[in-house]
Image (cartoon, rainbow, N blue to C red; front, side):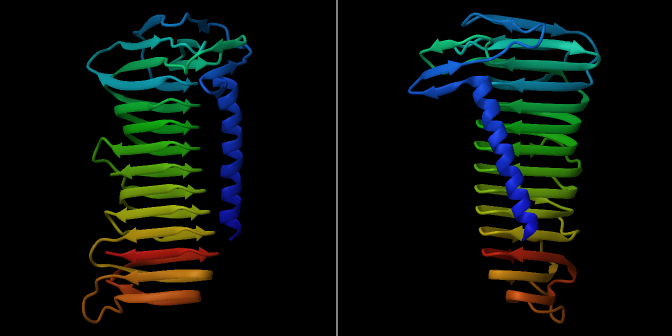
Length: 332
């Protein structure tokens, strides 16, 4: 159980840090009254007037992209063009903005104002990014608040770190890391390619991941709900509470589950079997899998410290479960 507790502690600390960043970047709000305090550190950041719009065009070859925002509504699209275009519309929140090339990296940043600002409404800045349709290298997205919508973006590495807000990602990357404190994530594979690794980490919120067959996966949450459809490969799952639903397109690897409490629900393809190794203080594992005659039992209810033989079909893999309490259900 140490593993789950350690992961939960790390997630909690990350959440606290993210909250501090969010406050520093976007201010403290209560009843539409915000206080924003910041300190200017970067040359090239522009403080824009409320409602001001700026357009930036880049003809250089872009390999990597870094996007960091405080509160903007972000939209990223790929287009049939050799020129990347960034459009920023300043809201009422007194934020500053920059878009520039550093080597082959496009860096886009919205950050807190560099003075104390009182305003009467929430920030409503907007950021639109139009990128040449191609495969990119590393792409990172960080947001304190605000929604993010990305369509048809292909890259080698994709990292997303958000504190709040809703994100919709239609992407593909060989390695995907998505971390959230709250809000929601909807991510789908815009290709038919299998990823090498996908990591989903959250403190709370509802998250849906679709179509990412992968060689290796890591999924963990403090609370909230995570649904992953079309999964494959071997991996690890950890939760403090909440619910995790995994639906496998291919059953081709072992899985380890570490839970303090909550529920893990696993759906396997026809012909799948499991060998369960359980260590539980309370709760347990329920298995109900289709089986051909002579291939083993189709159902089992396990508790305490126990190990099973093959349950279900002949295409079997190990399921290692470590529970303080909670339930794991495995079925077709």
